[in-house]
Image (cartoon, rainbow, N blue to C red; front, side, top):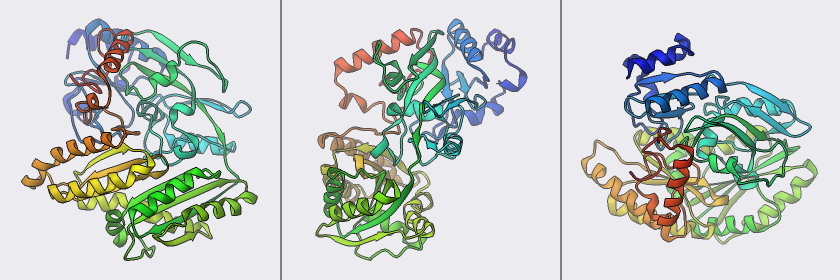
Length: 458
């Protein structure tokens, strides 16, 4: 790392805000993709002004920057560029303002998702995006990936739940996007452009989150089917009736078999698929909402329809879904985890296609996810120490992406592109669209210092 550059950083960052020794920087080279790049330096700005100074200095010395929250992403977007600068937002963790009358909260990017939920709940509100890593992931990371979670089926993704942003572009300019109102159509929608851009256009320093009132009550339902087709028909029927569930989760038969030993809930031996459904709203409306779900759930392969009668029962029902992660980690700690999306009616063809790939390549595949919007998490449980499986894994992945696109799907719903999927996106995006996106990148970041060599093929 350039000594002059380090000395220049030291003029406005304290010793506690700057790491330059290789062993100190090492841990900040990872994210949850398990890839690693050795940072040249790691910085911990505490304000918008310091981020501005860092970006301007990096432009001067042509040092690449990788913005980073808590590194919970799975596609390598937060992996360090060799000898570049990692900008960790973990100390920018203030909730700046909560305005319940106008239903918004302004936060810095290092605030944890769970902290936002807790603070909002104290005022009778919540922020809809709820990824499974909510207790650990930051708002900045949520926005970088447009990470949503189960509630997206009813309440939308971060793009639908952010009113505006404050940010520093790649060429070191301050911008403010969006509004403080729920309507506004002046100029291009730069807020939605920055959300999901994986830190490649600008570094977000503040976000105005749109708050939603907490529902009065919620009801949890577990529905089990003999086969994928029946479960998918039920998902389509549920999404066509007037009661929109606040969660509609799916796990396939392979996943059910995996979690039996981790869950205390009785699951029929012949279970081929399971749905977890939640409805929310006023207490008085939940009986009719549940009845609507039950009517839509009546398919030929229905094995059981169970409504939780207490919080303890709710916890027991969700235990099956939550048991998946430890089960998968136990079976295949180095699994490939992809989050593809297909139209709801194509879920059976996706699952059966994945079963065929699993059989052909000798790699167990377990599927679960957000059925209400067709977002399925596909887990390839290969052992990198098994030569045959390791050789087949990426060929199998390649064919999986081909299958998804043939089913009118998309390669990522909320995990992003990063390093893991960058060589595949040319199959989904046409050359004109890719060219426009590269030009947008050049406008925001002409020196290509913000998360370079990510998201797009080299």
